[in-house]
Length: 515
Image (cartoon, rainbow, N blue to C red; front, side, top):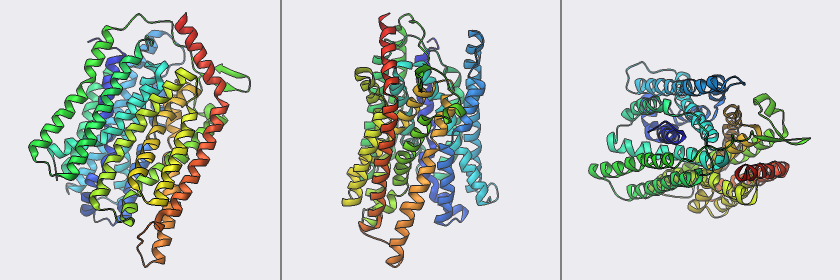
């Protein structure tokens, strides 16, 4: 099959399915703790570097801009950089992934002497940082290939990344169950090999967009089907003990489902009509109104819109990550059983996926039908998150609360990159959206450590060292709710500032389709 944007999409999906190893820390954390003689505080410190590495993607954006982005020049030069420059981004990710996890595996198995904790933090950072290189390449290429459906395409990419943790865990339970050290070796080898094997199939090849939506919807349907299947399997595995044959069967079905997008790509390529006129350049609101412009990172950081989007992400991403980081302690304080807590943790990836996928899909739908700018959906999801936090704080119902928060948290990961590409342009999108993504660890540190951690410790000290009951986290979740209301107001300001911009986007799109 000819290497078109559809084959590039399938290759990107498969890379995304393998590259979410940072979500699987719980599988090998106990082995890491015992082998290195860590206490819980030290283990948490290593885990922090995982979060930092997975969310600080500035270097991946800069590398993409250096080896792929062209400043004018011939179309031949542009094509050359796309075909041969882009794989360098994947190679950089693959090298970091292998080195980081392989050195951790050598440490845990005793092949090398027990490293200093700072070195282990570095290993963890490298391993998680690799994810940003895979993600940057796949997301930016998806936006470039589907300029009219950026929300849907980014939602698909971010959605499969959200599912990747659950996919990797299923493979682990089938091949290496109860062997967490071997799982670390798998994480070193498997994502690296997948990205290296598929990297030359991923390239930007924007062509006709009028017939893209039905095929993108098919990819979306596959993603939803896989998410539903994983949710059922996770629930059953928490209720029953699966024999080896059941793991083999369920994982085989899962792998067949992951391979199925290839059929969609083949059908889409056969039905691809001739390309229309080239897609128009992105727009941005300035004091003089909507204009065509491509901004680099420094130019973007000089705008009010950048800081409005960054502040909104601090509130939404920071509060969501603070919740998942503390969900075990929250469940224990509310007397949830270990099985229930593990189920909540496992299902978080499913809610996260639904948000990542739904945020892009729904915002595309309303943008095309009603010209409603995407920042409005950041406002709506943050207000919904506030409701979820109030449910947790007032009733302690983690089932309802975690679903609302998980879905709304996930939606930010498709809304934010797409908004970035629309407001600041695609050329330096990788650098800009990865800089904004730093809001995730920044917000998490403020809200998890300074708010939830401090308040819990104060309550625990007042009760002899431990805390049980709704009061342990009530004030924290009232504060998180207030933070999200504030974030909703900030994103509403961004929506109002960009209304004319989004209306003009749709006007120009309609003219292009009609002419």
